[in-house]
Amino acid sequence: MALNDDWRARSLKAVWHPCTQMKLHVRAEHPQPLIPVARAEGVWLHDHEGRRYLDGISSWWVNLFGHNHPAIREALIDQLHTLDHVMLAGFTHAPVVELSERLSALTGLGHAFYGSDGASATEIALKMSAHYWRNAGRPQKCRFVGIAGGYHGETVGALAVTDIALFREAYAPLVRLAATVASPDARQAGPGESAADVAERAAAALDAWLVEHAHETAAVIAEPLVQCAAGMAMHDPLYLKRLRELCDKHHVHLVLDEIAVGFGRTGTLFAHQCPQEPAKPSPPCGGDRRLGSGRSSTEQAGIRPDFLCLSKGLTGGTLPLSAVLTTDTVYEAFYDDEVARGFLHSHSYTGNPLACRAALATLDLIEQTNVIAANRVTAERLATQFGLLTQHPRVRHARRQGMIFAWDVASSLPDFARRYARHALAQGLLLRPIGHTLYAMPPYVINEDEGEQLARRALAALHATLAEEGEGAAKDKGIVDGV
Ligand SMILES: *Cc1c(COP(=O)(O)O)cnc(C)c1O
Image (tube, rainbow, N blue to C red; front, side, top):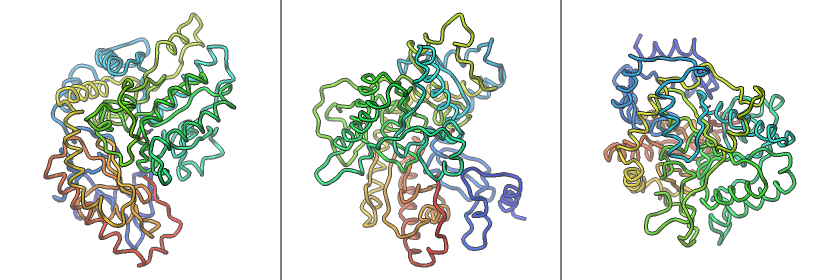
């Protein structure tokens, strides 16, 4: 049996794949291909038989500098020679100390607490926030409010603030749902309205909600600049400024989830550091959102959250690691003679030395490659290369923020995403639309030729998908597309 087929068959028997209706991989007509990957390098994933796929979504948004980067690989090998793992309660080690110091210097938030994935970072931030208020003598402040379409992970606690029905429906009875307020998604702009107007409208809705509920609310949780899982919904940075003002005004915490957008993805090192009033002449955050806000350039750049959740790109896409950073004020509310006032949360692999070392190597690369400036050049080039896609007559709301590009496709196919992904794979391309939103989020190292291939193949896959309209779309009715 061919190697690819062999691994595919064994995987379908033994492995339960994530975010997948397994039957779609095996049903007779148009099975969704399962791709065995033998090795990966740069932007390319290689199978066992010489085929390769351009990783246009950085393997679910985790990869920053390409696969198998020599600098991260060497750091990991070196770390393996000295310390694999030690528990972090009662022990400490150089990689976790150095990483915490560096993250603090980059964000102005000290006191890094570690988990192993994004969802646990969300839960850590929510628990810390509620426990802070309890320690502060206000235990009734234990509810949360999130933004419509928000995504913060899929464990039972994280689902409470994740507003994506497909991921939540089956588990509704298990979840203590948070409240949800209007999204600042710039696509909602009416005639004559700017993205900033939409942001103001969403902020007013949050304000009204907090007037009623702040006394029982611990925190607002939001994804700054781009709600990725919602379908790359982008908003005006003014919304972040309003979030900070409203959280201050109503005495609730601001939790920013930069699990997907951190580490240069949106054009600044962290999305919340994006200037609300862009300094001319450089475009806001290296982006080119179509809807400009037209405000002047007077105010200081960025805001500071009370909690910052990081994961995905933190290790450059090599090992699972997440971190929650917070303020001195929060930290001090837990610092006490009484054990129960401490933050008694742990994971077995908290602060794993290998993962921390990969993160340190990633931060080195961010510095050494001057990634913010470099990405600005790469993103401009990609925007030009994507020209035909952006101008395609079926495309609506072409948009980008830093190294995130998105296009909504007007198509009658209810399963557009799955069909497109299949055609993309046939083109040697990993792209997985979300609903009817096609997007690209490639590793930062994508070069000119690879960018050209990405753009050309993405367009070819679009043509192939749209050619299927009308021919049996009804058969797939009721199957909704996931991430
Ligand atoms: C991916 C993601 C998460 C969840 O991270 P996992 O590691 O998949 O648990 C949370 N928030 C955002 C914004 C994400 O994109």
